[in-house]
Length: 431
Image (tube, rainbow, N blue to C red; front, side, top):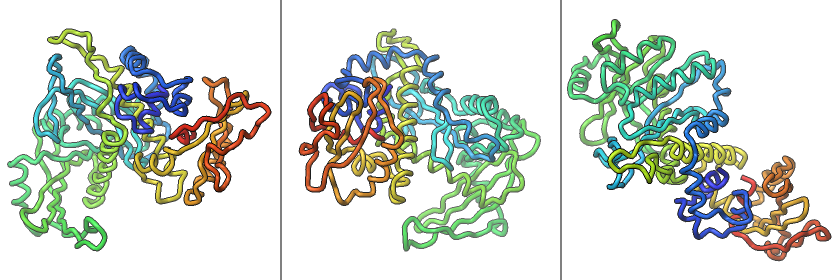
């Protein structure tokens, strides 16, 4: 698990890249004297059990922060494409490629306000959003008591009337669901009287840009099998050129919140989408281990949740850790992406000095990064020990001004067990 965690933190794209890693700092982080081989790490990942990964997920979930609060959560799916021709795994619709292809799905429950992933379920490529929504609702009710739960869902939950009917049974939960842009719906929105629309102006796409003009109107939509018509917020976005953009929200179990507030609340879902993009491009979420056994039958390969769920959930934990690291840095790093934190903080030249009681990490002195000193001081005050290194305590510091790490001397020279060796990226030992 440490190898997978720091693989995501440091941006190692694939497991087979461990074949060429020889960094002693990364070896210590991952719990050994040398970096684990690709075959051993891959074998351990494929050998995990689904029940074991579920226990790990339950132990590391942060549901307690939701207790007795009015919270808005977001649930969405992410497709992991599998370019295999040997195994006939079920297909799913890939929105970016606009086609159905062999894939597996990740369903993340996200807390937009804290920008944190709360839960994960993995399925085959044919998994349905509505089924996972019902499962997460039951899980939230079972694990934490909230004052009010509000759930943002994409149009996959409103694709069928049956899905809306099933959601309507959860009377105490407010749902903000993007309405599907079917021709019948769009034509009905366009026929609404202009007097029912209220104009608003929103900030442009960048500083100094023209304000974006939108119009909001409220109407209802009749769904077969639901007694009361659904409250519908229709949004018309005026285009700078070309046709205006129409979209709408189905609102279940909320009749009092103003339409503009509902629109802004739904737009917090963008933090969920941003988390997905960071997971794909910075944490290599799409390179997670596959769920189908490589030694299974090609015509009926089966599906094992454990390996896929383990890699995806550890990537989510790594993103939470990097967010916490950014919060401990100056304000300009509070929402920094992982690759920004790697460039400024994690990937540092350092000397490692091993003594019978300490691991000393001597970082290169850089005057422009003096803002790291308070963080290093807090780390040393925490007295972090490494169980897999004989319980040695990790102590960090900077080389003297004008010296490189290789010029550093052991803090405890009389008890030094080994000489220093330069290792690029060892500064990540405190993240």
